[in-house]
Image 1 (cartoon, rainbow, N blue to C red):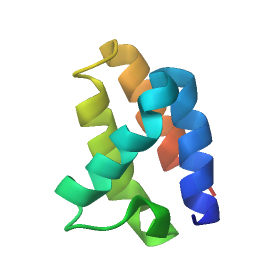
Image 2 (tube, rainbow, N blue to C red):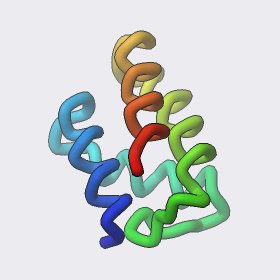
Image 3 (tube, rainbow, N blue to C red):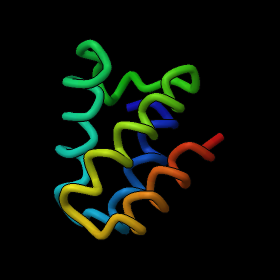
Image 4 (cartoon, rainbow, N blue to C red):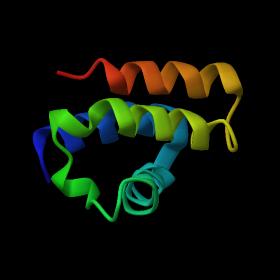
Length: 76
């Protein structure tokens, strides 16, 4: 797992609990042309954060989904 993937997972667990990794894997696979979540790189981050925000709003409060997306987008 890339360092970026690990950081995104750590942030996401706070919002999505134990389902976070499966959720994040689905975002990269289905919305980012089959990209493996474990191969996430800085160049993918803006698009990934966008999809996390959109999809998370379906399962958590919209404000929390936006906050999660912003935190992921700010990962260095």
